Image (cartoon, rainbow, N blue to C red; front, top):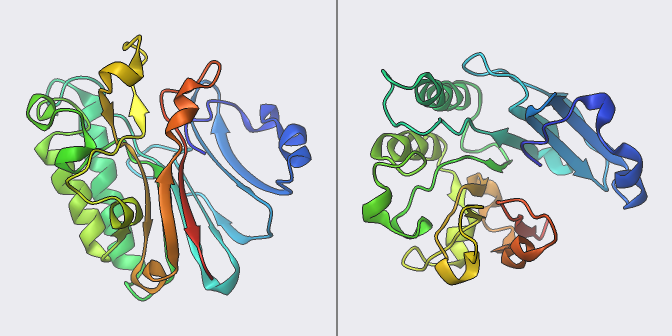
Length: 231
């Protein structure tokens, strides 16, 4: 989970335990940021890292079989894609650089890793409703795409959802609240991702997006993204 926007002592642990999530790790703050991991199986080695001066945007754990899971909430970057006019955009680019450098220096392509999160970037042409119109919109600018691909290429990460949905097909995980009839307009973006390192690529049996969740009562503008593994 990303963008939980709640302090740790206010996180609804009892309700989630009742749903079967016995193992929960959270890193949150009031009204801003926040990541959480909910699990039915035990995990270890909980770590929270700060990049670009930003806290409560990363948490990692170690699952069985030496699988490391990283959960990220990348800064959105504000509205103006200009580092001189918009400090939030500059911070986003710095965050991407620091994350890429950390993985390059501390992990190898042979490590078994899963990376999930709201990465706030739609890297491919058909990850957005209009590639041409959104090239100057934050989340689909060339500089953001370049930095995300550098991160992805640094350890040869596999984009699980594009393994099961070809790149020439539209695929979204986010629809703005501004669109009254989101299905009819279908002006979406794929901001949420699940990546795996090379040793786990063959273990992914499916990856999909729960689009119907956008119709739930009081929904998020993001919908869940899912992947299934055979380990």
